[in-house]
Length: 261
Image 1 (cartoon, one colour):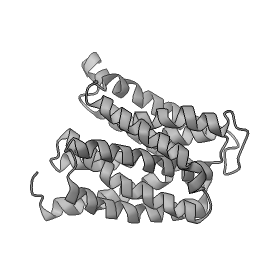
Image 2 (cartoon, one colour):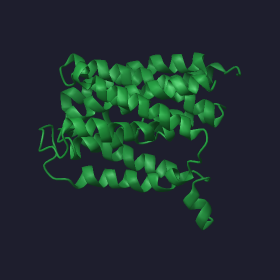
Image 3 (tube, helix red, strand yellow):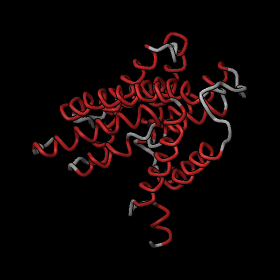
Image 4 (cartoon, one colour):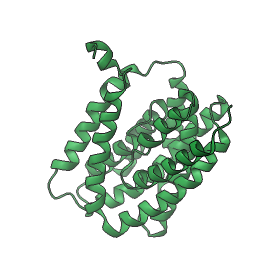
């Protein structure tokens, strides 16, 4: 571990607050915090592990906020949360032995597709629609799969949960956001447990950022509940596109290496 200058700690704290705000509404908080941790001098594995710890506070804060308003039933969603957590543990364990290059290759295009879906889909608001999968099948098949992805790679997991809840479970955008945060919280628990055993978490910085994440997420969730789809939909589209651009801008992205750009 290493000592951080006061201005670096402040930079990470502000970044965590902003990430908590964004993530509580549309997901994608890692778009802010992972690069911030890397810029602060953390190794990639420490950045991922510390990010999971601080993200736990943000997703937990948002979950509490949405549950307090009756938008998510914590008891009914507990089995899905457990499956999300287990999926994340399995993904994080696999990440230690498998290269993630193929995921990095397809991720930007998947995020752009999600952005286009939410941008172009007509009549998308806070009203529930017809579900394409029963709650049992959704929890058994879809939830652990996205949890697995979150542990294996991470960026965009909240957007994938959102898309699944809207397109397959038939949820309105606000309800989908509320349920996404609970499952994100569960997958973060799985990631924290795995990275903690690997010794890849910088606890002091992660806890400090976590407090800032918690506050930012409370503010974001409060605004989302007041404004609903009018806020969530455009922010989700912007976040997906920004995350796709951020991934493609990485000089080590497989696509850029393949074309020599």
